[in-house]
Amino acid sequence: MNSVVSKLLSFTFKFLLGLFAIIFAVSLLVAGLFVVALSLLRALFTGQKTAPATVFGRFQQFSHQNMWPGRSSRGKPDSPGAGEVVDVEAREIPVNRHLP
Image (cartoon, rainbow, N blue to C red; front, side, top):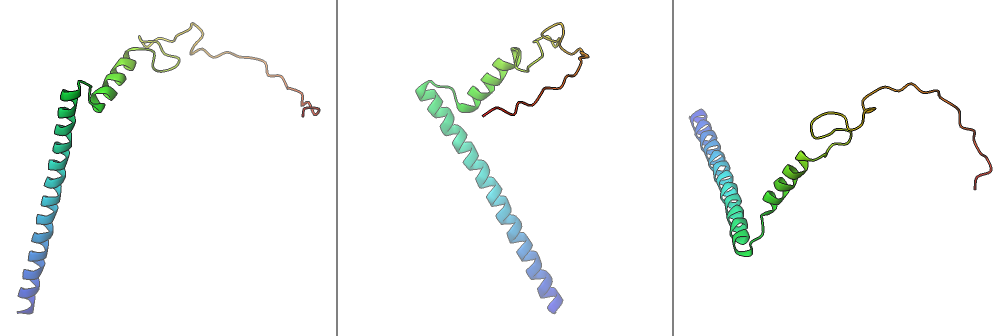
């Protein structure tokens, strides 16, 4: 008898926990949709773009330009010497102890 009651209470607890998790997830979804709807209504009334549209627009703008240093828009190096290994002679710089 004790085992049956234990299993029944365990099932009830798991069911309620799952139900609360579903309610929480749905409420987050509804809140997110509400915020998006308000953002779109604000954009409609003010005539300004929404923040995500502005961010993605700027990313798209810079992706066609030279966004990454050392690379051109076609994927080739900017200068003829870029990407080449140059062998130089190392020289020691003397330490000037009279600096302030």
